[in-house]
Image: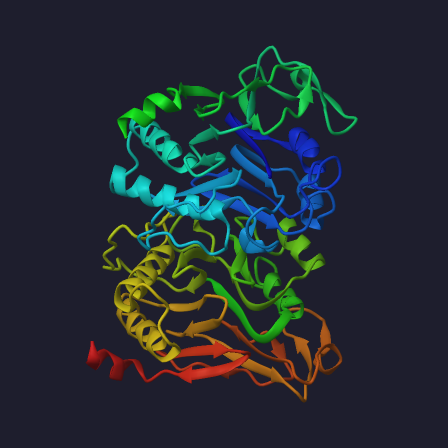
Length: 267
Length: 267
């Protein structure tokens, strides 16, 4: 399995501190040695940095640490390969464009022989079940919502429908963003924490490092951090319920999903 | 206008030396200060690094110089903005997927109100004429060639057709690669040089630096370097003819286009 880390903020912010702990799980404090990647949005575009070496020792990861980036939406991933070789084309996050925007996505889980028919509009480059599910997601968002990005509630409903369909084939924890909203879906394991005024002093779980967020942030700053497992102590991480889809915008949770059973009835 | 640099090799090679001179044109020895970018293929995938700062002073560019990459196909670009703001979404190379492969592309020139109707399969993220033309190119390759990459001659013919159509709207010098072949089209200015055994000793035009390629390369190594303006002295750069499309594979030129007038008659 892999691990996920995401951030959604109301103003461009650095993920530096949380990333520090997360990257150590890529071969040092945990077993996710088969590559890593990070996508961070800038304006209408998205930068994606990926590597098939372990994040704890990757020169690219070291450089990311030394020159941290500020962004309103970030998705990071460390990989423990279950399907697909250890190579660049199988490293998350994957990024593709839809409705004139870039969409980035990372997946944690395993989909068993997923029957997700592709019509050729999005074709996987690598060999993972994860990228296949991403291609299907974007294809179906485009097919079901039409030529333009729908309003937020309709988009949320469609993503929720697709989560239920795809999760029928296995474990489908994922993060998805178009630079505006960040969607987070939990099959088995996902946590989130909100950071806002009054900011707290917290400590990394994976490294002997503390930070007082009140010294780093402005009282108006607001952010949500989403991770497979809590990265810090000293703040309250909330576990997602299995089947739950959350939708973050401007640093806070914007909508809450209905339980997956209720959705399944409508499909 | 912008400047282009491309490389196609029979084995993964470093573009380090040529890139050293090219990046200096991004604000130091020349005026291309509005961003830069590089795409290099690795296996079936493609890494893209872009920045909206001048390449001569970009920290990202400096890091690329210190940690050079080896690849069989590389496309680099330095930008002097003519259309579209100086921002990440307008920096070349652009990359999109088609037929399950990534395609990277960079353009030098200016297309005036190009009438290139898009059907929604590829939608620009930024606001440049360059990205619009790339979206049209991929859309039409997909539409005219079908669901799979055609054989090399048919692909070359279709790219040539599209060059003639798009160049009718202005200057369309570009580089395009899917990691296998590198296409290079000249409207006004493009040069290429072949490097193979016996390798020569050459000197950069933009910097006081020489290299003896016979010491760096194996006798079997073979590469073609394509650039807007020659980067070195001591080797023979060949100017493309206006309207010429060339197709490089395994480090050498694989096909030569017919003149644009002859193509135009068939369309």
